[in-house]
Length: 280
Image (cartoon, rainbow, N blue to C red; front, side, top):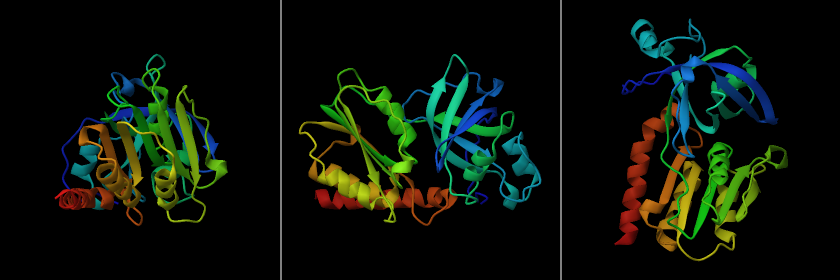
């Protein structure tokens, strides 16, 4: 899954697996450390990193310099990036925690996380991020799925004192529920997807919930189709101003991350155009 699009070069970091833990049947928690994380300073509750992984069949393994690989290897062996929210950063210990959703042998990051052992090296980029719950709203709405849960959990832990918050997280079933620290004033609803289309039950749960009136700051990330539907509701029905929204499709059904990232600008432009036409 080599990426054919030239990208702005960013300095990579070399980290080392400290420990792993399978927290649910389909989520592996990977804790990274090492000198390569010196100066790592995530500013936001939705901070993320990009794991830089060799594609299947590549004739090299970590550690490596991504720029060197691109210069030396054919395009089909260029390293691939997979984006993960920071579940926790322990500055004192120098440890970065990532939760990786796994689907057996499918994909790259899932099998990597399942096979990771203490001492294994890994290359990553980051951190990035833009959202942190603020004090300029009467209440907070956080919506997502397994891919968004790390950012939602981190956001709940850093809510402003006394804030009201309502979180909705879609997962496969009860076995995928995790322990999440909920401050006073915060509620978390687990939405079980079962065999349904990802995002469908989540959208229905949010729209049916007895949510409060007043201004809301919303963080809505996950499957692109579900995010689009909730964005329409937030902008059209609730009239939430853009500055109080953090809304993005982390992934899209039937797309690899590389293909989705290539398509995402056009998708976002179409959503923006639709939103403007509805406002006319």
